[in-house]
Image: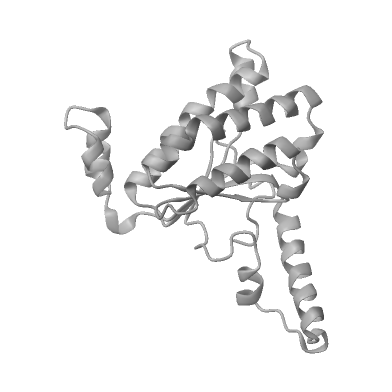
Length: 218
């Protein structure tokens, strides 16, 4: 919060908003379903990719603001497992935009002390995307501020399945499968978001009221 006040001047539009924020009521973790880009472009008679490109700037602003407010975590739903069903050309464009974001925003992430993470079945992403994602995560791993999680190739049901399967695999390896008991604490610790607080606020940028298989357990 202090960092936000230091970054703006009294004559700027965000000053009044900053003054209205009660720091005692700030959420620890905000989750955002980033959708509506295609419809935004369609209303302007633009190709869908134009909507995706236009969404990069608001992402930057959101990350910077959350970092300056001192929030603990921000999770952005960037690519769902269902998104693979979109036209191949659109999917390829999304990967290109993600790689562009990772390259262009590294400096901004570092300047704002943001630590980048990724949740989802990352191992199924194109190799070049995995490589650039891993590189950016390494570059920011020592940052101690906002935890920015990109949900990529993510599905809430699959996250729960992966957590259960990991618990079973660990119990089998330890020879304790017969006595394994799964509770909320142990399952929660094995989710992709293990170690982070559950989201206090869920935002869907299109305004629709559905969760779309996002952070179902949390």
